[in-house]
Amino acid sequence: YYYPNVREQMVAKGTLPLSRISAMVTMQHQEATRTQNFNLPLNPKFENNKEFRNESSGFLDVSLRYQCSPRTTEGVLASRAVSISVQIMRACGLQAAA
Image (cartoon, rainbow, N blue to C red; front, side):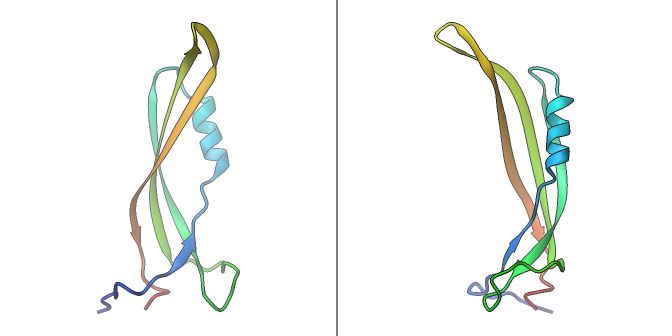
């Protein structure tokens, strides 16, 4: 078994697919809230190498909540405001750290 130490850190990046986020925006009905979950592969970055590697070291579960509602400014209907909040639900996989 591997028990991670508090001092051990690993930097990795996961990329949200912009095409799916755009699809959420175009398919959204006004005043409705929609949630979509993504399972993103994490690409590690090591201290001796400044670039990210293409091999996956784990996964990041992300929940993206989308809501669109019109906003007014001093009684005048302004452009539509889009609010997107991203919540990290779980990160798993210690393959690169072990």
